[in-house]
Image 1: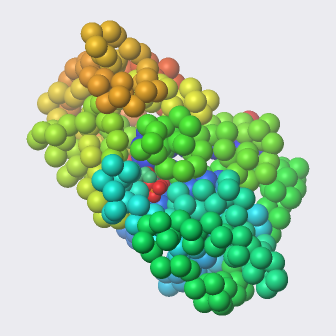
Image 2: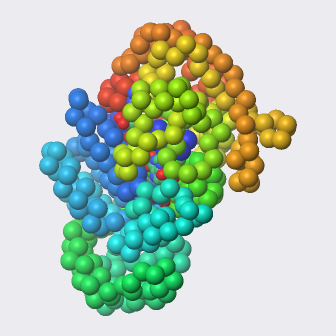
Image 3: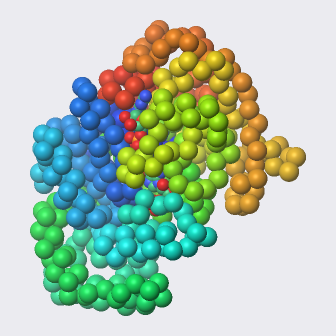
Length: 430
Ligand code: GDP
Ligand code: IMO
Ligand code: MG
């Protein structure tokens, strides 16, 4: 049976949540493998809106197993809150439908504080993070001082772990002018929340390998986007995890051979939230129009997303770094009514043509876009459910994108609604 990895192929907010929800009808297990509640995924099902940050987007469908893998950083208080909100919306969540890997590192309140203190204290260091403690939590993971889900089960272990973490954090906090951490209060807080997390704790690597052997289909759900990847993104203006498809294996404990199809989620234009280079950014009426028609405001922080034309250079690059087999092309309807559309087909750096985004930050910032112009369309594509409903110029635009990124369209999305989706190639087909 085929297993599919979904990754964002731009700077996030490509519509991964909608596509994962749509695809999860075909899957048995849906697993998050990186990021945390910095993600914001909006699903619309028969007009009802669901907003997810930490829980896999497959959770709204009954009869599926949702999994939070070890590659995620988990804020236990946020987990409890998000479960409560979804239950109020009628979603059933039990230890049979949700599992959290025992080796998942936790986001503590001190991580959020540190994240926000760094962002507000020093304009030079500002990344424009979501302020949710993602970076500091991953730092503790690789620094071997994280508290992990399994540590919550034993008081003595938890105390040792907290002491180890605080030896680092108190020194850091003194330097930032923050008060030292109240050790006993933190331990009490963790012991209080522990049962609400431990009821979902499981050896996820084992469960997934058993499911795979039993012929179940696994859908790996990426958060963020490949250009926010800690290695391949626009460093340092990135998130603190690997976002690209290879992370699906390490972030859940299944071998890379389990991945049969990588689906890149690609928005029909470009957006980014936070600081950092953005070659095809538009600071004009076209950019404003994209933002308004696309409702480009962050789900997590409410920030306005920066908008620009479709950048084929970037997507060709991210399709390569994730080994994308096909893309889900989303928000095509947002382009309705533009007289002409532009696609960034190359960069110019100091008079030299480039067909990829260079690594050096100063070079990234100095790249200028080379555009190709295509005719727009005046008809509406909103809600289209077949190619036949698309105007000729919209099809031409999609075909040109496929050519430029060297990757075929597998799915096409024409509105936020679950079923306003055109299937070209089934990623789960054997
Ligand atoms: P994610 O983070 O990749 O899951 O994306 P977000 O949910 O943050 O942002 C995508 C937004 O676009 C959401 O509000 C979706 O409801 C919406 N959306 C998804 N697909 C489409 C589409 O094809 N057309 C339009 N107009 N909106 C879409
Ligand atoms: P989804 O899953 C868009 C951005 C932040 C910031 C940078 C680092 O909804 O696509 P962090 O809090 O992760 O340390 O912030 O990454 N960022 C996102 N941008 N969509 C996301 O998630 C994002 N998650 C983080 O804006 O620039
Ligand atoms: Mg989002």
